[in-house]
Length: 502
Image 1 (cartoon, rainbow, N blue to C red):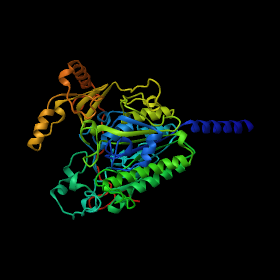
Image 2: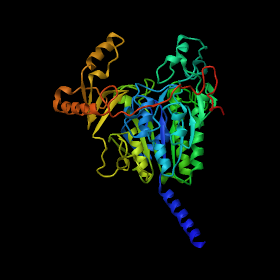
Image 3: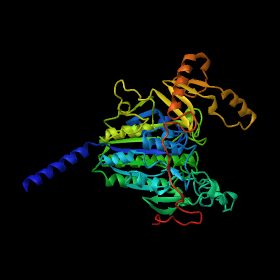
Image 4: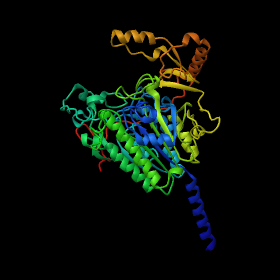
C-alpha cells in the first residue's frame, strides 16, 4: 500500500512541477484598430496609458501582419495558416452561414488544451455561427461573446448606427424575402436577424444598444474572472473584443470623456480593459509566467489613424494588414524594445504550442513559424518568413521579400468613383514596387529602377500557382466546413434556435 501512495504522490508532484513550468497565454485582439490609434504607435488623439506601459515593459512588433478583413484574420490566428488555405471565402462570414472553419482543422485552443491548458474565448468569434463551428467545440472550455461583428444585427436594435444616432424603424424589404437565396457565407444587410450574445452554447441575451454599450466591460469582467479561477494552472485566454468596430458604442463610464469623440472614447475604454487584465496578472503574481500579445484583426477604417501607412481595412496596402502589436512577458521579453521582423497572425499557433511543450500538427501544412526568438530578442534572431504573400479573399495582390513589396496592377480592380479617383487609379493600374524600409507609406513606385528585384518577386508569386493559387481555389487550399440547412441563432421573428435557449 505504501508504494502506490508514494507513486501517486510523486506523480502528483511531477504534474504540478510541469504545470508550474508552462507559461500562460493571453491574446487580446481588437477589431478594426488603426496602426496609429494607440500611443505606442504614435497616436496623438487617444490616451492609452495602459498600452503605453505595456510597450514600455514589452516589445513592439512593428511589422505584424493580419488579413484585410475579420474572418480570414481570425482563421490565421486559430490555425497557423494563411487564411486562404483554411477559410477560402471572398470576404467575411455572416449570420446563418452554411460554411465556417472546418472542424478538421486543429485550432491553437485544441492543441493547448491537449497540453493541459484551461482555455477560454471571450469576445468576437467570426469563424462560423453554426453549432459545429462555435468556440465551445473548437477547443475552448468556456465561451462568452458575439459569434460575429457587432453590426450584424437589426437596425432597429442598434446594430447599424453608433451611440447617439437615431435608430431606424423596422421596414420589410425585398432583402427579407430573398433571405433564403443569399450566399453560403450568410445573411447580409436588412436580412440579418437579431444579434445574439452567446455563453458556451446558449443565447443569453439579445443585443441592443444597452448591451452594445456594456460589451467591453462585460468581456473584461469575464476575462479577469477566468484568470483568477485558473491562476494555479496553465491557461490560454483569447480576448477578441468587438470594439472598435462600427457601430461605435463606448461604455457609459467612457462616452463623452475623451476630447475627440466617441471613437476615441472607445479606444480609451479598450485601453482600460487591457489595464484590468494586466493588473490581474500582476496582482496574482503571474507576470513572470504569462505571455500577453496585443494586436488588431485588420487595419483601421477611415475613422482610425493608420499613419504612416497607406490604405485602410479591406485593402492589401500596409494600412490594411499591418497591425499595432505588443508582446509582454516581464523577464522574458526585453522591455522597451521593438522589432521590424516580419511576423503575423499565423505565427501565434506554432509559437504558443511550442512554448507550452505541445505538439504542432505534422500531418498538414502550416504557414506560420515559431517567432519566440524574435519576441525574446535573441541575438541574430530573424523572421521565419523570407516571403510574405498578401491575399485579399482568394486573390494574391502583392508579395514581399525583405524590404521589397511588389503590388500587382490587378489589386485595384474596382472602378473609380470620380475623375479625381480615376486619375489616381490609372497611376496605380500598373505593377508597383516599394521599398518598405525606405518608404513605409508606399508613396514612391521604384519598379523601373529595380528590374532584378521585380523578376525575383514575380517568380515568388508564380510559385504560389501550385499551392494556394493566384486567384480562385489552388491545390493547397483545404475545404471549408459546411452544414446543411443553416439557421441563425436567433431567427428574424425573435425565436432562439432549438438547443440554444438558456
